[in-house]
Length: 411
Image (tube, rainbow, N blue to C red):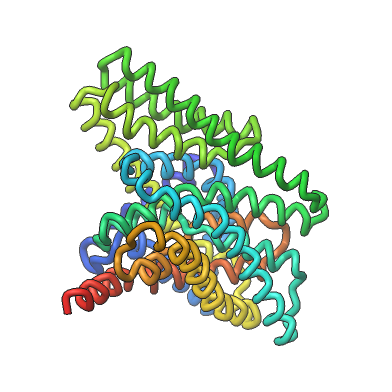
């Protein structure tokens, strides 16, 4: 199917589902459109079983969309920039240690915890998966998704310090997780040797290279923005940073997500204060807020439609259900350790571990990484089930958890 027709279908479905959600369901937009998308997919599957023959046509359309390429090499850069643009650097600096630890060491610990526990449980249940591929699953499911997190935190009204922790972590940990995923997936498929030097070199090139690239992009954009006062051109410059900068980072084999986050932070803070007029700042915010809302709707429609392309065998569904508590336990451990270490030197909000554990949502990035694996439908289904639970159950109840913690404080 032609690219224009695919885009037309996705935008039309996103608009219709968003309307239905706003008019009748009143759920957070991301959750609402995804649930409607899943219901439509299940309707198509049921219709196919009744001989209507429409599932295959819909499946062909979904299969023609390369989800991992669409997200990781297309939509992700725009969504990350839109999120980073509104994060205040001074708030981020205040939480730098907890964000830094959870986004780096936390991701690595989570990868090995989930991978190891899943390996032994699956072995015991006679559903074996190699240890390397269990670690691959651990790597792709460990990062909290900035797209899912940012969208739902807006609705939940979490305390500012908690929001900064979760948002900052989610903006940076996906870049780290992608590097870890690439290393372990390379070892699992035999494409890369598991040497300390090779892994360290790749991590430095990707992660630190992404930071340097982001600083270069941010300063270049800052210089250009400061020298003119025309909001149309300045918005165009921000688009060039996101699209051109991400493509350049990929070509140079450095982390595009990290580069875009760093550039977005610079433009949203230093650029906004020193290089933009109030008119430009207002138009820039409105433009990127609109981009964020549209792409979020499209992304979660896509997540819902992926049900048409997956083989939901009983064994795979059981593996996914087993993975849910393991992923939550891993999240609890990797949040608790840095909080307990750092609380000797600073004060944390009451209930911070509970809120960061339950508010650490998984989303489209995990699904995209799983779909990039060659012929690993079991891992993809496991990932999909964990992501659905995370977005729907955790996303819909995180606000109730926050209210409950706040009520306990008052009492």
